[in-house]
Figure (cartoon, rainbow, N blue to C red):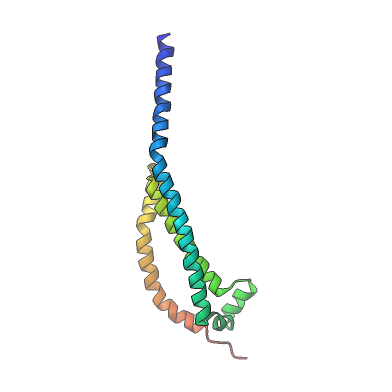
Length: 147
């Protein structure tokens, strides 16, 4: 009888601890959801703004006259939408990683996510350095094909 009562007390204590952990995690989960929603909205707005900027600069018209531009068009891609979508996706991924860090997941998966989040600022600096030569490449690709 004592063994059954002790097991029942342990089971009740276990469920109590689980309920406490869930209740304590609710603010972090809500914060993570808010971060993801803000990231999605910000990514959409920045992506659309980038799309409009690329269209206004006339880069798309010049790009469409190149071999690469023709390949994009034949594949059903639009340069301004492509660039805007990449920026939108990047911002959304950043917000998801920030949201996951907010939840503070432990274990191997948490360590992996922390490593990725720590690497992202270095990736942004690398991309910034890569954009300088990419500008030259982009302008050379926009030279119209003769004939």
